[in-house]
Image 1: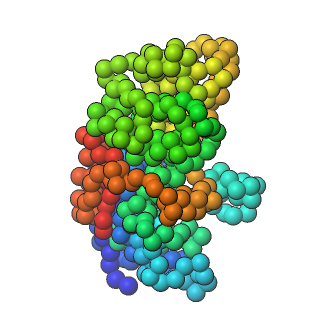
Image 2 (image 1 turned 90 degrees about the horizontal axis):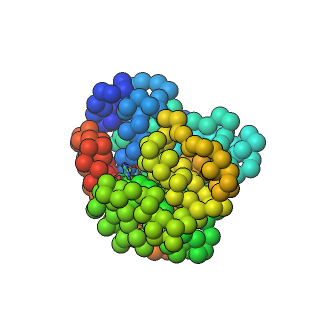
Amino acid sequence: MGQMKAVVFREARRPVQVEDMPTPSVGDTDVLVRIKAAGICHSDLHTLHGLYPVAKVPMVLGHEGAGIVEKIGKRVTNVSEGDRVTVDYVLSCGNCEYCNADRNNLCNDAKYYGWNFDGTWAEYMLVQASNVFRLPKNVSFAEGALAGCAVVTGYHTMKISGIKAGDSVAIIGLGGVGTQLLQWCKIYGATRIIGVDIDDDKLQLASKLGATATVNARHEDPESAVKKLTDGKGVDVAFEAIGRRETVEKMILTVKKGGKAVIVGMCFDKISVTPVYDLMAKEIEIRNPTDHTKSEVEEVLGFLGKEKYDLSRSITQRIPIEKATQGLQALEKTGKQVRIVIEP
Ligand code: COD
Ligand code: ZN
């Protein structure tokens, strides 16, 4: 079907290139999606830095994306040509112990679009039928793209944390994912929500979305700030949504006795929490959510279709595919952007 533009990764620590490549041809169980919006996530930066490897090169990056079904394979029945869909980037086997237990994020043979197979930063993307989900009418393509990572990662994290109505929470890192996590904590009844970031704009946005207090970690130590805000006790649940050693260690110190510390950010360093006895004496539970399940994608889309959920403020910039490199630099350098969306 000719050529398409795609953002291609060839080597770590080298800028990505926008290249022409053949539009993929459709197999029996494939869906060809004409991508209308694709988000840039911090994990894509991890890949560019060589921290999180890809399975082949050249690789079309990107794992958040939504668009229109252009063509379906002979055996595809769940979507039709012309449907508006979002992509679920976790490709699971559907047969293993974990898939059968509705925990396909832990699939024994999990593969990922954007890492194992070509991803969303392209004019067209080939997706297995099992991994496209129809968008509710009121959900735009950009919102639909975020639903596939930022929103559902926040949702999965919130569920793994077991948050209850009335809980107090602290979220360190209010970027693309942290901002959505904050919204879910509020929806699920957290009453005290402390947002921590180093950027005042991010903190302001957090207040608009429901944070009851904010802390700028450049000016204030998050541990003492959180303690001050919780009568010296700490929070029921704390989250780290950046992936840095220092912030993970800090986050754990903001948790109260019997509380939970949830590590969301991919952190490639070792952390030290010494003495370990401190965790034991406080009976602190450490949780490590990863990705999301298929059911959660459906739940999130169902929710976005019916309920109020503010994504307008989380989409802070839209760029054409030719500007992908600048988009990546903007997420990395300025720290001002929440989610940048590529519109091929
Ligand atoms: N203290 C406080 N805030 C900080 C600090 C600091 N020292 N340093 C940076 N920040 C802030 C930044 O200002 C920014 O607001 C935020 O932290 C980071 O946000 P983003 O937008 O750069 O990153 P996201 O939200 O796109 O990335 C989210 C994760 C960190 C969760 C993601 O990269 C990740 O690691 N995911 C792993 C888990 C997973 O399931 N991933 C699924 C696919 S992403
Ligand atoms: Zn992501």
